[in-house]
Image: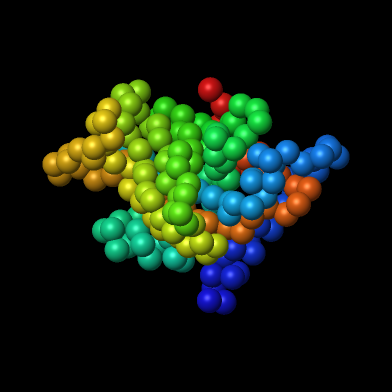
Length: 204
């Protein structure tokens, strides 16, 4: 529990400098709802392959490394810090949920975006999709909407109907670590992507 508390504190401490005060105004029902929901943070991790040789990047936390090891990955590197993902259903304006620009030192992928398409009855569906020009490459998971809940999900291929497709003898091209944090503090909102400018590359 101490390690989990430290991990959450580290994530929130990292994001604090990039928070911005909201303009003083009467709260709307949507803004009240946003303050009541837990925050969702994601981090993209790439396995070391001939296409994606190892390079320097943000830290990979011990719990992320342990889950990657259980998935059979021994070498990997992170390409983003923790990026907040917001639900487009609860925002007054257009949501910018760009997680990663897709550029590496020796390789290039399509931009990656996050979303929270569903949230009810104590469960939250998190989707992080992109990587390839063909639609369907996505890390997707439904998990308990509880502060401290966490998982690492592989990027897999889905059909247009949302069915997971089996790809024989092919390792995932990437993994996404997902962490549920506490609701945002009143008067502040997380600003995604600024903390990842150095590793995300240019936005497309």
